[in-house]
Image (cartoon, rainbow over all chains, first blue to last red; front, side, top):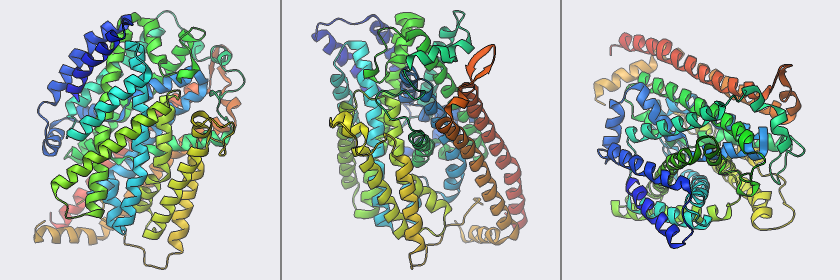
Length: 517
Length: 106
């Protein structure tokens, strides 16, 4: 991935120069920053090659530094860009994203981390294949995981597209295609594991740059109360509190969105991998405590940054709702710190975006190749067979993400992440929580409920305003809301409940192993 | 696991104190999850259903709407609850588990 970064610094400007459009000023600072960042990351990852080394490095790090590394795993540039932009274009309703993205995190710790650790199961497929008939349930969880990965990747790619537009004057599609293609290639060829040190560096980079932007924005006598005041924010928002461009604003929609934001992260247990790598349980928990602090601080800073963006950018030409507000953070950095700050911030963001892109392409394709193919289709498959499936999966998910990113050009990136979370909340979260906490859940209930949730969320998304109106161009959406989670989660949970209690077969025994002796 | 370890493991699993501890941990975990999810859902319902309430200024001289400090308090509060949970698990439950382990002869 870090080689990819260096390569990218050569290719993208070459394209820009070829277009003879010249480069904006921040771009030179971007180059000055991206080279040391990539070298730093290259150096910090040099020693990690295998999973064994990954776990070994986890054992050596202390609570605080491991906490920082976990923070690096969790924070994404998409929420940084997306939340700031949403507050700029939609006012207070953008705050729901900051609060919602955070609320999922302690729930993962409390509901999943300790429990999975004591069971010795670290992925969703491991958990469900213990309790249920393996084939149908793992198939369901893999199919349910696929749109989550694709949408999450697409959100990163949308951000990359905007960054390349901002930095190199390249068309949006250019950046998406180049970087998306490279992420696919890395996913196909690479087996990459991020060292704790690399993630720590990323966490520090993104936290420090957020703090600098916020501090500089507040320095010139900006009074905090005025920053958040209605008088400042309201004029931007024609009628209501929930002004989202072309979007419904009913209470049910907001509840639906909020539900997806909180539940979504719970469906992604792999973000806890670094928690499992620490041998000493007490220290592992302490590191999560530190991580919670850093992540909370980050989300508080992002929403302050959003209001600062309102104060500095409202009424200027850089506010264009058509770009989903995705560049608000960079325009704000340029307004308060000039071209140097914007360039360096862009370098930080691109570094983080690329790392999420490559690690997620890999995580997604290994879920497909290992969990589904090896566990259910061909248990006796050889390593090279598994590798081929892995490559194919990386290609399919990467290409789908590129297509999705091209279609979602005008959407806000935090919104796309929220949509990914709606898919996770409708399939894998009920499956995971049901199999851990409800002893009467049966294979039949899990499969029927899970598929019902998946079909419901897919149908509502396709016929909702996002796809039906924005992409396909019809005038009226069949499903009225952009946020399908409330309906689809209810369908999944009711389906799981009804088809389990009406199931005559004996429910499989829940594992009782806790606390680990 | 050697057979000796397995026997210790089984003895621990059947220890009545262990069963009680297991129950206590489960209840504690559910309670804490409820506090986190509940406080967020309360905020969410308020946000969705009665936004006007959250948009009232904090005080006469301070035009910040209640929404902003509440959101910040929610994040900080959930961080603190996480801290309380971790502290409790790391001290009370872990010590109890160690005691039970010693009792069955680990």
